[in-house]
Image 1: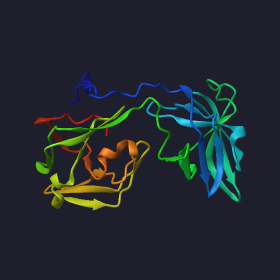
Image 2 (image 1 turned 90 degrees about the vertical axis):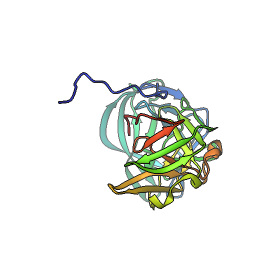
Image 3 (image 1 turned 120 degrees about the horizontal axis):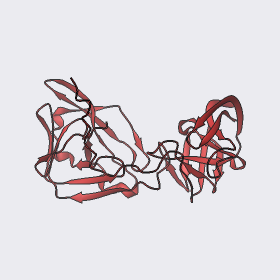
Length: 261
C-alpha cells in the first residue's frame, strides 16, 4: 500500500514563480507569418501567463497585418479573464481555433488584444530572430557553463557515457542538464531516431538517440544541438541525457531522478 502521507522530494533547481494570470509588457517588436503572408506586426505586445511555466504573446487587434479574425461563438473563462475563440483568415485560407480575443474583464490591459495558438502560425519573430515553441520567458535564465565535473550515465546497469568533464546547462524550472563530448559515449549502445524537438532558448535539435540494453530499448533518452542559438554555443555538438530516464553520476555521486518527466 502506498504511503498517502509521503511527499515527493523538492526539486534541486529553481522553480517557475510567475502565477497564472500575470501580465507584463513586451519590450520587443513581435511579428508572425502564416501561409507566406504577414499576420501581425507590433511593438505593443503583452506577455500573458495562462499557466506558470511560460507566457504567450497577446497582440492589440489593430496591429494585425493582412489577416482577419472570425468569431466562432465559443467563450472560456481563463486565469487572465474571459476569452472568445476565433478562426484566422489569411488570404483564401481559414485556420480554425487559431486565436483567443480577451474580453473586457481581462487583466491589465488585455481587453482588445488577441492571443494566438502558437502552432496556428507558421513563424514567429522577436525583432529579426525567429522564436520556436513559445515566447522566451523574461523570468527564465539559461546558462551553459563549462565544468570539470566528471559525468557517468547508466541505464539498466549499462554504461552509456563516462566523461571527465561536461557543459552544465542551468535553466529556470528544469533540472540541470549535462552535455558531454561524443568521444565519451558508447555509441554502439545508441541508435539514432528521427525525433526532432525545439526549444525557444536553444533552437532545434539535430539528433536524438535511443539506448539498447538486454532489457529492451529506452527510446529517445539523449539529444544534441549541433547548431544552437548563439547564447548556448558551448553545447554545440555535445550530447545530453534525460536525468529522468537514466542513472546519472556527477562528481562520483548518483543524482536522484527528478520527479517530473
